[in-house]
Picture 1 (cartoon, rainbow, N blue to C red):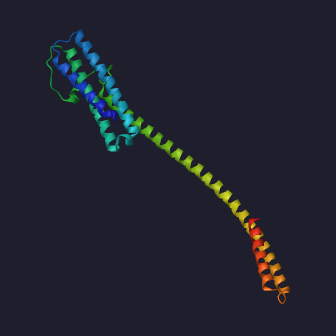
Picture 2: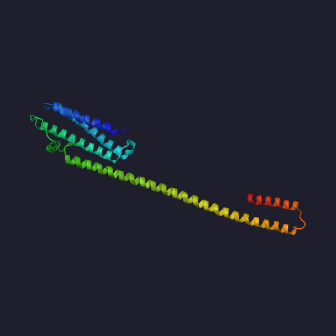
Picture 3: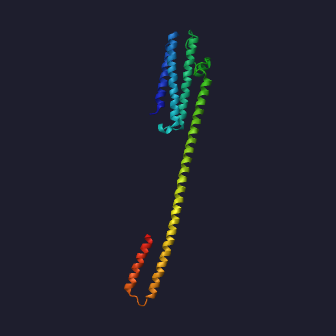
Length: 230
């Protein structure tokens, strides 16, 4: 199952819940601050899970039927969530600093620029950009390392296969040399046998009978079989 979709839905749900909470709160007291902090911390943990889900899907996109454009889209969604969370925190900090000020409808970029709180992980938009760029660079480095590992493994397998093929070819060469020597030996024995038969035939050409010739031929065949089996 693709972990990204489920975590993304949880993250948006928590963002909407936090946005609704900010809209409902009319008086900023300690209880309200504690509730916001708890919801905010839970949202931060969910966002961290979403980052891990992006890493998982990017490390093995084929498992989830994803392509490069899908991965880029997921990173863009992650960036949108970071900006949205920063916007909500900026709005809450502004409410805390100015309890009597009515909630203003501003652009997301203005909300981010109004925040001067440096302690929150989402308050600095430039830091968010830097962290996200660093995250992308780390992912690219991990991808390159993975590709280099795969290339190294492939080269090692090819080297092992080449060594096996070389050993088999060398062994087959030895076998062919032995076979060639055996064929030469059999050929020499066969030539000597034929010479002997021809000699006997020439000596007994006038007096030998067909029966004798037949016997000699049988002997010759048997001799050839014996030499071949030898």
